[in-house]
Amino acid sequence: MSKNISRRSFLQTSAMAAGAAMVAGPLFSTSANAAEPKKAKKKVAATDKLNIAAVGIGGRGAADINAMDSQNIVALCDCDWKYAAHEFERFPNAKRFKDYREMFDKIGNEFDAVIVGTADHTHACIAAQALAMGKHVYCEKPLTHTVYETRLLTNLAKANGLATQMGNQGASLNSTRQIIEAIQSGVIGEVRKVDAFTDRPIWPQGLETPAKADPIPDTLDWDIFIGPAKYRDFNSIYHPWNWRGWWDFGTGALGDMACHILQPVVDALKLGYPVSCQGSSTNLMIDCAPNAQIVKFKFPARDNMPKVAMPECEVTWYDGGLKPEFPKGWPVGVNMNHSGGAAIFYGTKDVLVCGCYGTNPWLLSGKPLPAPSVTREVADQNHQMDFVRACKESKENRVACKSDFQFAGPLNEMVVMGVLAVRLQGLNRELAWDGKNMKFTNIGPTETIQFKVKDGFSVHDGHPTFEDKYTDPINAQAFAAELIKHTYREGYSLPAMPF
Ligand SMILES: NC(=O)c1ccc[n+]([C@@H]2O[C@H](COP(=O)([O-])OP(=O)(O)OC[C@H]3O[C@@H](n4cnc5c(N)ncnc54)[C@H](O)[C@@H]3O)[C@@H](O)[C@H]2O)c1
Image (cartoon, rainbow, N blue to C red; front, top):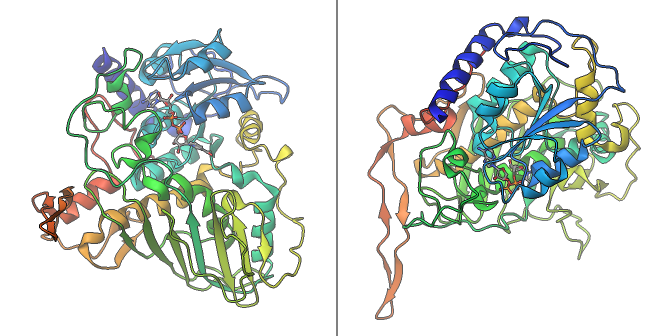
C-alpha cells in the first residue's frame, strides 16, 4: 500500500510543481481532487478559522498545534500512536493517519496549512509535497536535513506564493528585533567576528551503530519513521527524541540549536552564503554525531547598510560543552550560557551578547541597548499565531513571517552545510563552498575518505591499544554530493525544483 500511495503522491507533486505558478490562494479549497492545481480562492477573513493538518505530533509538534488550537485542527498524522496519543485525545474530531502520503491523498482538499514536527530527515518530503499542493507550511527547525532540500522548499514556497514559517520561535521575539536594529544602526560598529555556542547535546552521541535490533513497539510504524532514509532495524536508541544524534535522521547539536542561536546573527548581519567552512570534533563515527564540535564559517563582505558597513565576517560555532573564549572585559563570574547557549558579536565599537533564541541581549560596555522601534513587532511575540495571520492574508498583501522560508532557507542552508564540515573533517582542509551551486569546490574527483565504525580502544598489560575499525575508502566527492542532495528510498520523492 505504501508504494501505491507514494506513486500517486509522486505523480501529484510532480504535476503540481510543474503548475506551480498557477497555484494561488489555496485557503478553503473546494477542489475534490488534491492533484488539481488550485485556482485563486476567496481570501480568508482574519476571523475565519484556518484548517490545519499536522504531521509528527508527539513532541514539539504538539506544542505547535496547541499554540494554534484556536484554529480547526482537522487532521493529525503520526507514525507512533502511543507517543502521540495525548494529541489524538486532545482533538478527538481530527482525522487520524500514520502515513502523511495517505493523508495528502485522501483528504488533501480538507486543509489549508500543514505543521511539520517529525524527525529532521522527513521534514523536506512532507513540506515539499504540502507546498506543491498549495498548502501553507509551518515546519520545525532545522527546516530540512540537506542543503538541496532547503533550496527546494524556499523556491517552492516562493513560486506558489505561500505563507511559511520555520519553527525557530526566537525570531518573533522583541529581543531579537532589538539585536537586529542595534547592529544595523551601527551601535557596536562593524562586525567581523561572531562566536556562538550551545550546551547541547543533552542526548546520547558519539556512539557505535547498534549491533542488534530491538522489537518494534506495536504502536510504532517504523517503516514510516524511516521514510526516505536507508532502511535500518529499529533500536530504542533512535525513537523517540534521540534520533537527533544519528546522521540519517538528525543533525546533531549544530542542526538542533543553530537555527535558534544563529538566527539573529544571520538576520542582523545579512550573512547569505558562506564561502568556506572548517569543522572539527571529538570522536567521529560513521553513523552518529560527535559529542562536541567546532565549526568555523567565513562570509564575504556584503552590501553596506545605511548606518554600518558589512565587511567579511567569521562565525565560529561550539557545542558539547565547549565555549568560546571570554571577550576582553567579560564580567567575572557571569555565565555565558543563557537558555541553552549564546551568540557574541564583536563590533569595532562594542560587543553585543545574547542568549539562545536571541534572548537577553546586552552590551559588554554596560551601555543600554536602544529599544526596537523600526522592525515589525509580532503580536504577543507569538511565532505560531503569526504564521496563522500570514496564512489568512492574500498573496499580494501578505506580510512575511519572521522566519518565512525566504529568510529561514539561507540560514538553514548554512547550518546543514556546517554539519557537513564536521562529517568531512577527514579531508583535512578548509572546505570551499559555492552556495549558489550547492557544492564544495576543493574536493577532487578521485579523493577518498574513511569513517570509523568501531571504537576499539582498550588497555592491555598497561598499554593503550587501538583496534579501531574503519570503512573502506569512499569517494569523497560522491559522498559529499549525497549529503548535499540525498537519494531517497523507493516510495519517496521530491517535486522538481521550480527555478
Ligand atoms: N522549536 C523548538 O524549540 C523545538 C523543540 C524541540 C524540537 N524541535 C524540532 O521538532 C522536530 C521534532 O522533534 P521532537 O523533539 O518533537 O521529536 P520527538 O521524537 O519527540 O517527536 C517526533 C514525533 O514525530 C513522529 N514522527 C517521526 N517521524 C514521522 C513520520 N515520518 N511520519 C509521522 N510521524 C512521525 C514521532 O512518532 C513523534 O511523535 C525536530 O525537527 C526538532 O528539531 C523544535
